[in-house]
Length: 501
View 1: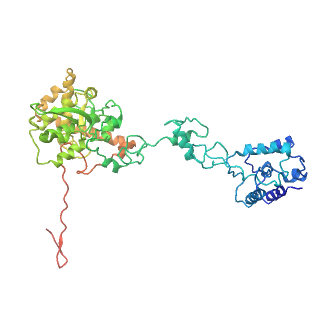
View 2: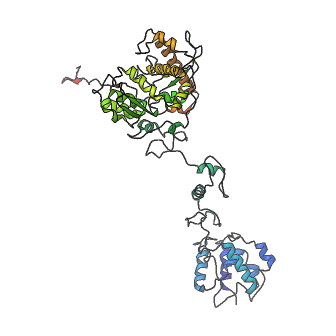
């Protein structure tokens, strides 16, 4: 009796519905011939081994499954011949290699293609299942139909990250199939520093913003203590800008410029001295002139503004410098210009700076500036007292006080003190000559040139921050901002001519 399904399957192959040689079970046809699996056995007609069994896949397709009704096998074989189930598409959870090996062994013993238990030999491809993804919890079929593979690159990379196989910035992997490029791609992408924003950073580095809009909107919430170490890690050594001036106590003093309104500006990135800014987060204690009340603040700006509103000093505790500046604007009209008994803004700032640099780390960093000129360089002309007003027309009081404090902390080698006393009243800040203002103008011009040179070199950070905020948005130091008022449009007369107001 000839097995009907073997002849039908051979005809399906001859029509091109199952390509010759398209095998998914991994068994070699040469091994079949060598083992004698293609001989006439167990009552099987000889033409089945010489003409119809052209491929090991068709051989496995003719092996009957125990307990499977004949009509089901015939339906499965018909579905395959019609192209409804691709060759090698397995569905019952067994590996194709194991199934074919088992069928071949059964063929040697008893004749696999002979009818058994009244059941003709039909296709067994419906019996096997396609291998599933090796990732835990994923039941999708593998991408190439082979076992011990993944369903997609996404699943493979997720498995590598969860198992710790991929290290950030490294191409090492614990399993085969995750190459160098995939490991690099699997590393987590740094996201925007602004809370609530999940966009990647603009330069791919951590502790950065994604856009100018997020950088503008970033202000630490009330009660949040933001330490500059969260932005830059350990403090770097200040980098002075080369500067040479005539008639100065030091022949080549250099310039250390800063601003730091809560984030790094181009000049902070250039000189690495953001810790000199009043918005730099570092806890300190200040008191009134009688020392009857002492309060703790999270930054020098909040401490300085609290002296101006001493009766509401607790409103300035545990807030950022930008928040303190905005609160000062809200309380405008209620200022105490005695600054809690210290007498003036010059004296109040000196009191704040003395307590700020009692911190040992900040003290060492201030001394590390050497004999450099300290310049608060504002990014736009809106602060003329404490900074250089961007264009060099400012008085740079903050830089002046820091230079005096630096020599007090040094105790020896007073390089600038004698020169400054000739041109500035160090108790009130009044200028005895214009030499200090000329020095500020020269230093400001040098800093601007250095920033332009860095920008021309294509420094990404400086290009990113080569803009200015509006007057109402920029958190300056003690400067009252004004809004520009538009002139009213001229009214039209009935005759069509315009009349000016």
